[in-house]
Image 1 (cartoon, helix red, strand yellow):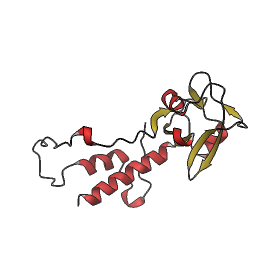
Image 2: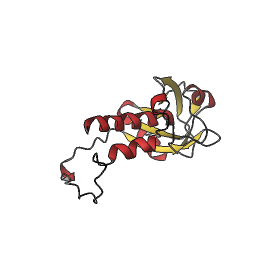
Image 3: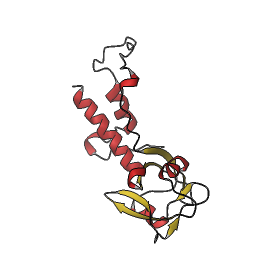
Image 4: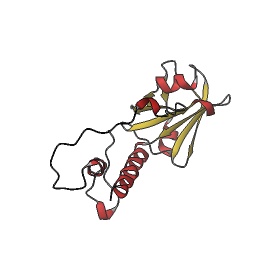
Length: 162
């Protein structure tokens, strides 16, 4: 579950859930009427970037994560050798003939303990997987980074709406 307290002392009691809810509320606190239906664009005209496959999954006690959709999008097969590296706080996995790890037969991924420690991923956390098939790369975002991205997005919403 993505829960985290704000580490900033001036907003110490604001959770990410608070930030999300507050950024999406009407800006007039006296406004109590039901929200009006949204004027939605024609969804057929929206451009959808299909270059990335995403999955949100929980890390189990052995370091395994269910990653069937992402592993499939990457074209990885059981026993393919893979390597892990940490860069800019995210964990990156890619197929590597000299990789020390393998894709399990279950289409899950086993994130090695050393890689979890280096990227601050702990058992029970949810992580965001982003498969980039054109780059033959899997980017694994730790829960704390996902929380930070959500917080920044909703901070920007607040600023845009004021």
